[in-house]
Image: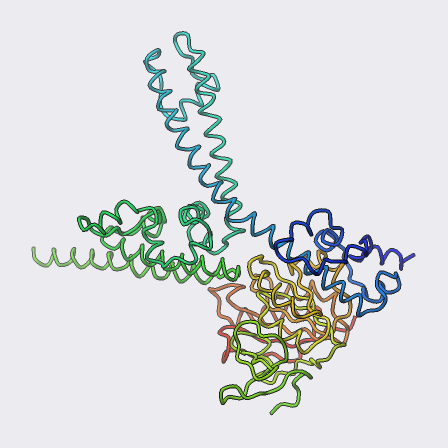
Length: 313
Length: 215
């Protein structure tokens, strides 16, 4: 009774032994085959039990394998195939999905705003009290604002604007939820949305990991960068990362330094995320410390200027 | 020289220096001497523990079973599989697990598993009971918790070989305080036999050898 109960908890309980023929020969490209409809892969990946047992002995008793050596050979094939399938699936699901999600989010937000502008312009022609923006579209859609005259097409447009804005919000939630699992350190350091934008602009997490930090610093400022390279503009201090609190919250005189510090840590974070996946909370502490030092400079300068001014008076 | 090295781990001379080595396929471009490949203690906490002559209780040989938590890309676990018997390697992140697969391909008694070491129920249907050693090197918060959760796999005479990373628990706290907390939590189910800082090779890490408290 206990024996059979124990046996059914093992990964090999419902596995068809014939499946092992050729499982070993499959290479990474065939991982999809191994995943689809393989009881072996499913058993390893989805099985669960609270208490481990002496599986090798049970498997031999159960005639799943002739002896323990044969059991271990099968276990090796099974774990290799299952882990390969899981890795392939996780990697494919990861940053490509995020890139699409963040681009779709930006498209939805931009389109919602453009349409809201069009809506405000149109509604303004039939009702002098018409408001602006997505918030006005919401009022119209909810019926909180009645337009003066025949307004059917206008309210219908308002519905579309609201739908798009809601879609954008849902995509943002998806991005905020997904980024930390794909790039935990980058997400923690940059915030999930900025991290996703960097990944999107670079083309993927691997691409961020392979870029020098100077490139990450000006990602998204390509126009300014090429103007600079053509020789008629100063070099850009920051691109996308301008929205990072540590950059925006720093006095303009020191923003270049802040952007350089942020980009440096972000590029380390991306490399850790891509190559090891380990969480390194010390990166946040190091960045916070560095930014504090940079911001302290302007405070000191400010104080010196102020006291200097007083002394002269 | 220590006589306590497990069978299958030897000291060999690489480019004029005496280093730990095991026999197997090279994994990360480490220097080799015939079949033997150097085991770099600065890249491996278990390597550092052996180098510091901690009494790991590892014996080596085909009969010795090991559960390795936090295998990452397989640097250390490849050496373990070289000298020990059936070795289960649990790793949570997909990207390093890809490298782990390559390492495992040439080692028929190394079983890679993509799973979360904090949830042993997701691999208890694969990993056998009563393993001789658990090697744990997971960089997450709650490292003592992971060791307690995985106690169910360990033989009553087995050894827990744990590398505690202070920065994973709390970067802002003094590592000594973090280590004290981890030790206190561990003592609920383990008896700590030896604990040493791995400072020489790994900053802010504590190496612990423990055995399960009798039930």
